[in-house]
Image 1 (cartoon, rainbow, N blue to C red):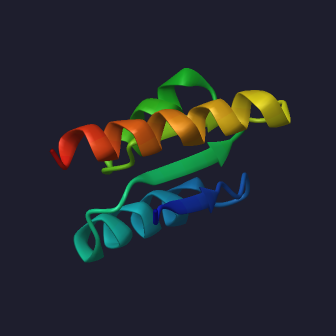
Image 2: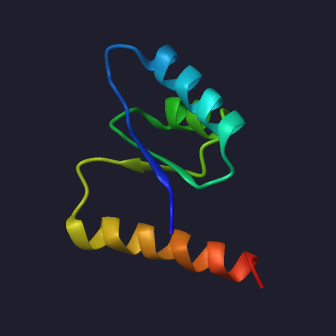
Image 3: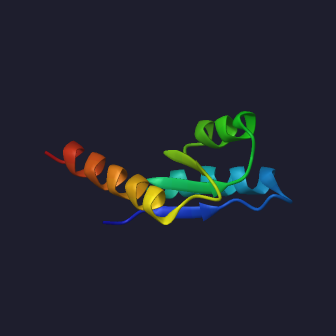
Length: 79
């Protein structure tokens, strides 16, 4: 199972959003962004094509649950 995880850099959000757009144009794999931005900026990431914006810090168990949910969703869509 492949997915792309992008760690948001707080000092240059516009470049991060542009990176997400480029990644979306190159792959249909799930794109996840880990970051500390507010809800408004998270919406901008989602509009750029990412599948999920995950606020950090996050516990290991919660992060694993996000990954499993994406895995489950991908396999549900393949049937």
